Length: 334
Ligand code: ADP
Image (cartoon, rainbow, N blue to C red):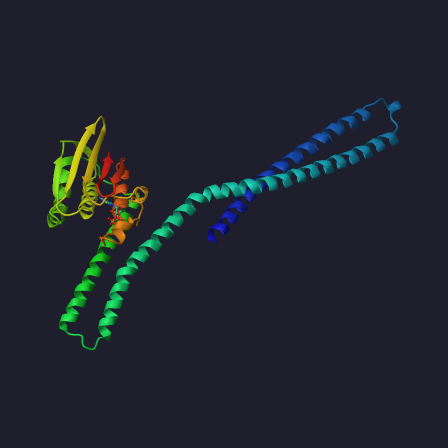
């Protein structure tokens, strides 16, 4: 609704500008043409006046003067009418063209607003879920007359778990917001294996819990990038590889340099991603059904969108291939 009125206002503004230009142009044209006609008729008049005295009949001159004035009036009327028609035509044409341009101008803003609204709705929904769970647990426990210390402890533990989820979500949202703005990353020459090892150290305990082994094939490659965000990128990919893999499986990391491109691959032997889900996994809040329902894995579908943004800020591309039940491979090209 707000955008409809914005379209209308912008259209009116464009039409107003077009009509002001057209009116100025018409007034100038009218003045110039009217002067020109007047000058042309004046010449005839002068010619008559300059005739030898015996050829001049005063009534004739008066008649000519009369005709001149009438002709001038008539020509001016014609001119005025033509200019009115011209301006009407401009009004009709400029209305159509202005509406077209108003839509074109506002379309990207409307799309951005739509995306922003969808994001706010999704974020609110995700925030509401743990809050609702906490509220209902607290309400049930408060109604329980026989609630003992053990029950209270259990409730607090469960609440703490939900608070943890809220914290994870708000951290992810903050990261996303930070990378969404035009952040100034500090680009430096970095050692790629060092970054990958630093990322690996951050997820090592998770891998140990699931007895997942890592197999690395890291070349000594130097890249230009922002250290902190690149570590964040590989933590997201490694964390997913661990999260969506069965116990005692393997995760493979390899790096390769070809011409000026550096390729980093993270491959797992996990649950895989359906071909239907693959195009959407980098969208904000997108989670494949398998990670939402059956397995009940933690996450909000924000990791890969943050990863994609980091890669974009480094002028690179990220892609994924996967076979359901066999595993997935994420490829970053910088
Ligand atoms: P999440 O927090 O849900 O892991 P992500 O944005 O990191 O969010 O990933 C989006 C979705 O992509 C996940 O919910 C999951 O369905 C799928 N996915 C990502 N990485 C993998 C992987 N290595 N193996 C299988 N599925 C994956």
